[in-house]
Image (cartoon, rainbow, N blue to C red; front, side, top):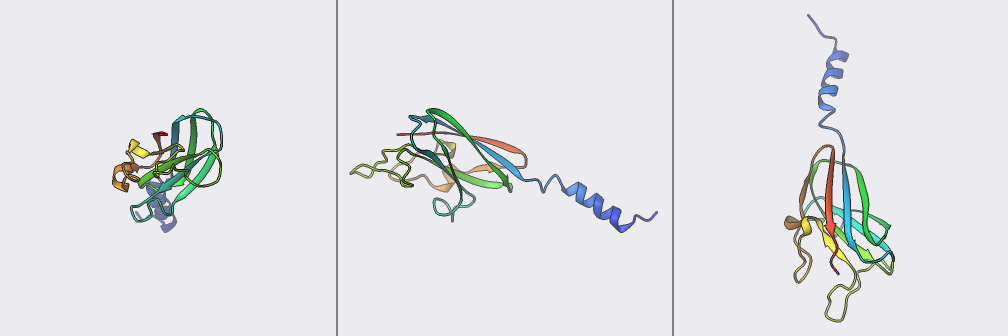
Length: 139
């Protein structure tokens, strides 16, 4: 029995469709001290682009917790950095010693000691479907 080529291609496409789906990342940011400014989220997909270039978005701040989503992401390894830009100037405010005075956090609750944590400490796996990451801000 011969299968027409268009049926074969359709069957292969259907079989692979599950592996080609885009993933959605839901981010819950907690510990927000005020509704001032915005919450800046930056998502990085490799160590080379970490804290340099990535997907980013700003959502309105709300005291307590906010939820943001990144859609249509390919499966892979990612790291997330979050900043509460309270004065909405696009920069992390620091005191005279260089210590941040605005809220910040990283995926996996990676700790910032004398600078941001490395990609490897913040990295998490994003598979097909939906993944939720929680980030608690430090001030």
